[in-house]
Image (cartoon, rainbow, N blue to C red):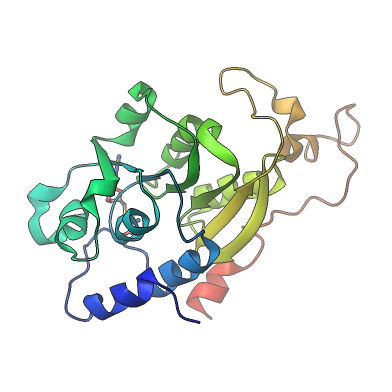
Length: 232
Ligand SMILES: C[S@@+](CC[C@H](N)C(=O)[O-])C[C@H]1O[C@@H](n2cnc3c(N)ncnc32)[C@H](O)[C@@H]1O
């Protein structure tokens, strides 16, 4: 099936180069584009690269929280966005610096239609990014978590798959996509682990808070996606 932006990107990519920051494959991003609305008001991502080119085309206010890696020349993910003729820079605001430092001090968030987590991948950084961004995803909006093949990110995706705030939209290679439900926003400054389904299903059945609503099954890490993606 054809897509608007990634088909255009594909023809540029034949002459353009890729950055070295483990970019999305064009096939994955094409599948992701199919699941996204054609035009949205506001989006955010952590990390930068090929996905930034796509978001700059579908969003009129795209915020990018990423390291300024332009000193790395041709390998730079920011430069990759800047030189691509399909990029629309006027739709993009960069907040440069490690997300571990920029997200806790960034107070200009507005409601986002789509948030992509694809910055630093070591534990607990995607979870920290989730903490600062989930309260700002619109009800009905999308959360995209890349690289759920990394075990700690897979566990985050497993948690989200069972959480009341998210419905699973799909898995494209190693990229998980969730839709924000109408559930109340979990208080990002409180506690409440006992109210979260992932925890309630996994405590001892002898405890009062055990949730008897079906078998416990890790949605992403038990899908054998490593074999599906890498074969063997
Ligand atoms: C996997 S790449 C993102 C690929 C991109 N989504 C694409 O489609 O091409 C990871 C990105 O995160 C950035 N990055 C790495 N560590 C970071 C950190 N601590 N804070 C912010 N950005 C970081 C890298 O510079 C790079 O832009």
